[in-house]
Amino acid sequence: MAEQLKSSKKQSRTLKWFAPRWSAARGLKKITPILFGGKPILRIVSMSGVIGAVLCLFTKLAFPQIPLAFFWKILFVIPAVFAYLGVLILMIFLIPGWVKVTTTYISDSTGQSGWRVNLSDIESSKLIIYSPIHIVLIIRAKGKVHNIAVPPTTDLDLLLSLLKTTVVLDKQKQFKTARAFMTPLDDFEK
Image (cartoon, rainbow, N blue to C red; front, side):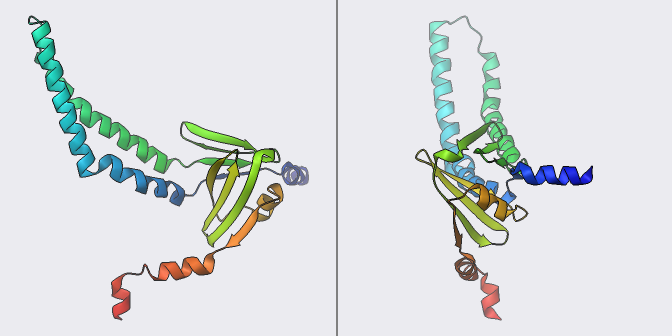
C-alpha cells in the first residue's frame, strides 16, 4: 500500500508550496510607509476633518432642525480604517501565499486575490538563485510578469522539468558580494 502511494505521488508531477515569509515582507516594506507614514496620515486626517466640517455645515444650513450631536462618532471612523488596514497587512504577512505548479498551469493565491497561467501561455521564465534560501521564479505570460518566491524545500528538478524553457541564473556570488557591503559599521572597526 505504501509503495502504491509513493508511486502515485511520483506520477502526479505537481508541486505545491507556501510562499516564504521574505516574499511578503518585500511588498510590506513598500506599502507600509505609504499608508502609515506621518505625512499620509496627516493629509488624510486633515482632509477628512475639512470635508466632515463642510458636510456638517451644509447639512445644518439645509436642515436646521437636524441634531448633529451624533457626528462626534465620525471621529472614530478614521482610526478604524487605519486599524482595518493594519489588520489586513498583518494577515498578508502571517498567512503566506499558496503556489501550485502542475503539468498544465501555474497558480498563485494570496488572501483574496490570485492568478492562474497556463503553461502554454508562458513566454519566458527564469529561476534566479540568490542564496540557498532566497530563490525567485520570474514568469512572463500574456504581457504580465509574475514573481514567485520559491522555498528551499521545493524540488527544483521537478520544477524545471515542469517548466521546460526555464533559464536558471545563479547569482549567489553577486548576492554575497552585495550583502558584504551591507554589513554594519561595527564589523569594519574590528
